[in-house]
Length: 292
Ligand code: GUN
Image (cartoon, rainbow, N blue to C red; front, side, top):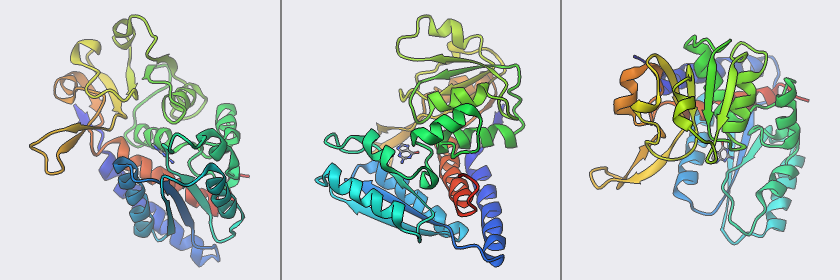
């Protein structure tokens, strides 16, 4: 079994991004600057945004964190988005999700200038990705394609089963895997909460992307020998033996499933670090004006 080490790969890519950023700036390019809007104090979001800010420092980007109270109104938030759209100092920015219930996240995402949408959530970027045009691919699916590419996992002609149809992961992942690219050309089945006979489908999978958000959902009896598994799950599960009182669990029962796998990502240390690096890749792309 090959462990698809996202942490190690993320470190390699960060070092490549740092070198590329240095030559870009030496040639007169402006220092990439990523801004992040965070609303409220959700533990997961605080951690993720913290990782993103730290990663910017590691590769020589500037970063700005704009942290607002839960009570911010939608109108105020839209105004903050507009300010970042207009700020020539800011290369790209993200609005960390989820947002409080009184704010319409779709409206906020649609207010982002697609040229600064380094999360790739704006419909213009989603549409371009669907058409195979140059665009910002959302960070988690982009990170997964990098894992497949760098570890030489062949996707062409393979049956990929994506479990989960979220706008952030499952849906874009299914589009990328079926598209015409080095990490595409697969036959893709998208499964979700209304899928019947899920096990029958997962048993036929050469590659499984588990992105449904249910800890340890995928068990050994659901997969065939030699499968490649990408585990996107990151649920905090209460655990009194852990220092924090919780432990991060993936969507895959790693202990038993890994024994049948040709390759698998761990949680933590798999997809998570690659998501952060993908955001850096998109920010550098924005600095170079590669997406118009
Ligand atoms: N919430 C969960 N994943 C993400 C992500 O990739 N970007 C943002 N902005 N919010 C998220």
